[in-house]
Every structure is written in C-alpha cells, then in structure tokens.
Length: 282
Image (cartoon, rainbow, N blue to C red):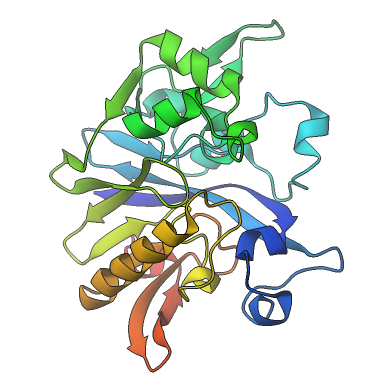
C-alpha cells in the first residue's frame, strides 16, 4: 500500500468561526491569525494506492464556482486537484474510488466539473465510484438552515445523475485495510476513514479534528451542527487513538500534516508532529 498527501490548496477563513466559543486570546497561542482575524488552512486530501485500487479521500473546492464565491476563501498555493495528483504521478482517470467524508463544498466540489465552456457538468473522476454517507446525502437533500449554504446543488445532483454514486449506511470496511466510521457532530453522517498499515493505523480526521489546535475538547468549530455531539465524539475518539497509538492525518492543519497523541495532566494532547512520509515512506 502506498499513501500520498495530496495538497490541493490553502485557504483563509475567520479564526473565530474555526474555534467557536474559545476566545482568540487562547486559540491564537496554538494557531496564528492575521490582522483581519483570518487563519490560513490547508486543503489536503489523501491518496491510497493498494496496487489494485486507487482511492482518493475528498477532492477540494473544485474550480467551477464564481470568482465572487471563491473570493471569500483567499486561495493561496492553489494547485487544483489535477496538478496535485500529477505531482505524485496520477491522473483523475486513475482514481477507482472517490471517498467523500461529507458534502460541504470544500470537501466535494472538485468531484464535479464543468463540461468545456458549456453549462453542463461531468464527473472529474470518470472511472471512480463516489462513496457518500447515506445520512449525509439525506441531510444535504433536506438541509437545516445552518448548513444549507454549504450544500451546493451543482456539486451533488451531477453525482447522483452520473450513476457513479454509492451509499455507505453504517460503519463498514471498504477494504480489509480501510474501515469507515460515521460521526455526526460536525455534520450528520460524516465518514472518517481508518487506514490499517503494517506499522500503524492512520486516521483521516477530516472535520472531526481540523488541526492539532482542535485536540483540546472545548475547541470546536462554530460550523458544527451538534457541538455537544462533537464533544462526545472527540473525547471517545481521542481516548481510543491515544491508547492505540493511531497516527492522525490532518486535512486542514497548515503547519502539521500528522501527529500522535499522549495523555497529559490537561488531557490528551499532540505528542509528535511530522509529515506522513517521514513515518510511511513510499
């Protein structure tokens, strides 16, 4: 099995939204902000090549949204999904399975693209099955008022119409080495992949834990629809991850790609931070 971090772009959004009720004077000790209260975040996917299947976890914003829409995110170091894959020797046609943790636009927008210069859409990964949580899909089709702006029709309906979409209804294994678990605090039916290797289990923590700065239990995003559920999910997950020495792979942490955990007098905290290929070379 080969694993590749796929760095699509960086983007800036409000630090207060990312840290919820925790005041800036506390969270800024762990994650910097500029004079406009904007923090710079990674948008990082993960590619898993088993030799038989090539699985991509999440695919970024995409490039089909208007300039006005994208101006809200201050993209920087923007490669896009095609270039990001090419840097590792892959093309969009090589992807056999597109695993989408959830359907917010920064996680699934790159899975659908415009057809040439026309008004239509096509699938970015023409040979892939698109795996989506069933509960997340139902939530996106009937969104609550807090999330409805995050579920964009042009990201979703072409997936359904393509015939490539597959639903995940419960905790399952897509492969013997790839377990998928469902978490509901950030959004209903978020899929969290647990990747078993001969050395350790790597967890793509998506928006359960956007960064190492979110490891302390009260550090929960304002975007989470059920913050008390997030609190319970984090506590249980962090206890399991620390006990079993999991490697956490961060999708949004600009400064830390991975970490392990340790128990401290203040609770579970990051132990070591490192890039994936320092521990799992290809």
